[in-house]
Length: 498
Image (cartoon, rainbow, N blue to C red):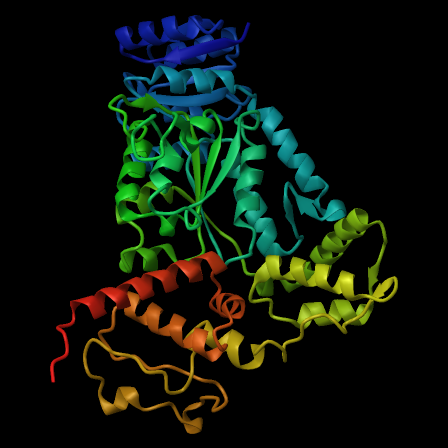
């Protein structure tokens, strides 16, 4: 039978935990201070150590500070004094989980069901790292460049814990693959991994999809529906494009993260949940807070362990590896093996890839289809001179658009601010630009840039999204918002009279 050690100076709390753990077919020992805890560990190494922070002879963290003492034990902090600082400190010292008193029975059962010795998890990570040079991939991610090795190191550290992860990066960089790799290397790997694109679900349905609903709770609810929190129980819930979630639902999500409980739509009974949250966005999260797209308190609750993915242009040395990986998969699916010429690989490396890895994969598929023989040359591959890249990609990341885009500023701009930069000031006269008055909000600047870029690319939405570094769904959502705002403004205007 697996063995547990409870270290808690509160005799009643320790006795309660002992009874609960014993009911899950564990042998249990109890210690009320650090000295007794060290003695119990010496007598029998526990498979799981439930550790209080405040003890009579020191802090529970002192046990974690001795890695040899708990090297083969899964450590779970169990305390009534929870805060973000201690959870981060516990993560750094190797704690696998963090339970708040009074202990939630369902969460405790989940922790006990997921016991894996830290050494076993570490061995898996070491095998992936050792094979990286030969295989070229780490979990679901491909690349050997230094930026990607830093990502692998972060995943290795956080996967074995239960803390929330917040992934940021441009559209197409592989945020869902990071989330999947974190799940596959975690103790939750045997439970579901569910991905939710918050920007792809109707605002009227997203609450029902995430939390579920009761039969008859609204028109069309003909039966009870389990939401993502229920279906992902014990596993990982990946919330992609979290900044697209309605603010009123963000409040409810925050409450679930803080209490571990939620209610289906139309229900009056709350339910316990045991789900790890991994969130992602292609926006700057702090700009999203400033523009009112993301609640600041939710950001701090999600952003315990941030991972920022590099754009493909920032790891160009990985492009040949990725291109050959995609080509090998397509060749296997289609039954005909094809190879890139050296010139084709060189062309791929030179292209800036505003759509990142997703765009590269699509380009490889297109080139495979168009190739006449076994070799793929640069004929059907994108180049930096195509698709408006010379005038659209790099500058648009900062400020782009037609030179004279009509924009209604909130306040008049001075002539100095309206004046376009000249060649003498280092500007490229071939690059279009927009100007905004000082005092414009982030939301107004975003709208002006997005609409100007759309016009610049003749309303070609795929190219616009790629140039802005956002997903196509996000672009469509923004345009719908702007159209609704325009309709509301028109409705508010008084009727014209002669």
